[in-house]
Image 1: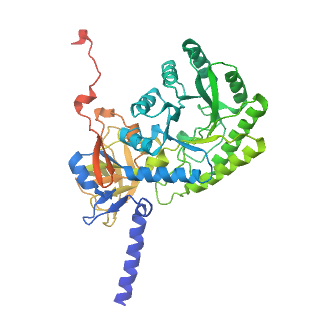
Image 2: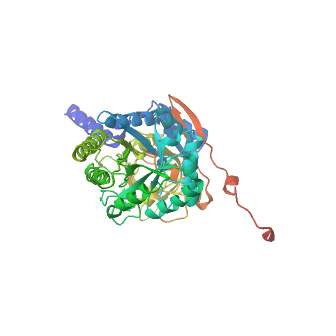
Image 3: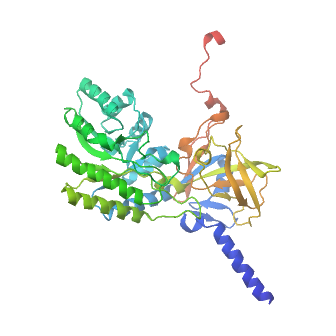
Length: 456
């Protein structure tokens, strides 16, 4: 009887452990070593935190390469002319961009700053598409001089570039971002293809926009673009939006005699942040999107265009983690709060999007979870809660927490709010680690600030 009970207990414990550590099954770059410490790319994160301090971002370069190749292979196996324009806004760390450039990735950029970064790492202009909304004249001039593709977000923007091109007498490759009025199932702040969205040109104005562009001597019409949102886990919205985009490509040929060099279906494919979140294989997205494109090419007798894709989160999202040290433990009538040395200035997604990140006790990974807690940031803001109602082992002062899936929209969205300096960042590659971003000092907070003479 005792033996039966022991076997039953071990089965329950095993199932519990599997549920707690579900992330290890698919995030193969993460592991647990003999010290019961979390590892990333085979490197002990406790050692990294001790050497570089916290908060600390760590990103696995091999995982980035693996995910890039998987994404490209899913589409490349179905369509002969595919180019990936990595979404710089997801993570603009120079080392990350260099890794992707070396793999052959281009760039989807949204600002003059991102253009500057792309040029700094030596990316060829023809591999860059500038898709930001509300571009300034300064940014348009910069993009024109650089020789990148300029993707119009509005007709007004096109008219402003016409004047700049006429002044400089320079030809530029152009495309238009279309708002396909498609509603993806995602957080409202991440939906960019809705009819009421600020992004893109609505369907009923697209043909007129292309007609105006066709008649201008310094424009070379090259493509058409859409982006319907971010963290999307269903291919149906992509199928609907891609169908609309290809219908417009057909109309451009039939009504204006314009055949496009590329079709850009944007990015936004989501990742699995928690266990009960459905995970859609990228090959399913690829099959649905490519099938739609091929059907429309046949329907409108189009020449086969290049297929541009703009993944960001899918490639770098789960490659990164945020390490943060426990500084304070507070019990209140409402909840037990675990206070850490990071806040939404370091990781804003939980506050901005009500986003979920798996939290792991990095220095005691396999210990039994026994208490439900809130993980509270160190900012003077009541909303600075990084994780709610999380079941963790008993947490003690100086313990190390790891927030998983922090490779995208994490350090690229950080700020110095509350005068807290930017964290350091480490790259793990081939079992070794490298500091790729130094921790800011208090002195750095004052950089570029000036006090007028009369105040001195």
